[in-house]
Image (cartoon, rainbow, N blue to C red; front, top):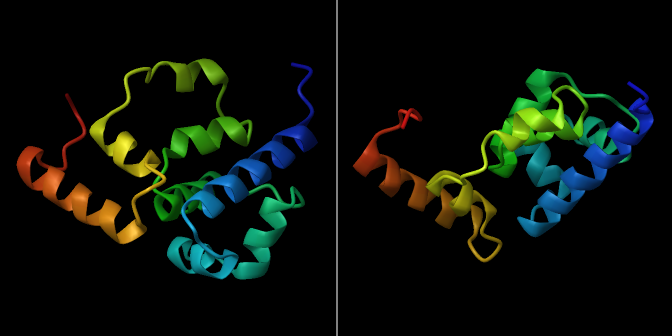
Length: 122
């Protein structure tokens, strides 16, 4: 592979910042949601630190995005792993809607899961 890991970090940081801003979250708010320190999150967004898979999972939960997407952005997974999930789920659509607030998304997910259950299997 000829991928530059620094480009992966910059791409990940840009993506995280984009998602955070689209969710109208401050750096501090996302760091609290994800359970990581504000300075560490700032370093990740600036491409200075490479987060572990566990930290990416926490960020994905805080941003309500797929952890796999963050793994691809960080260079942990190859693109083709992410491409396997071509059909967006209801959960993905709710998480991706830029009009909804975090509270509205959580409420919709709670209602949806009350109908179908929390099992993610089809």
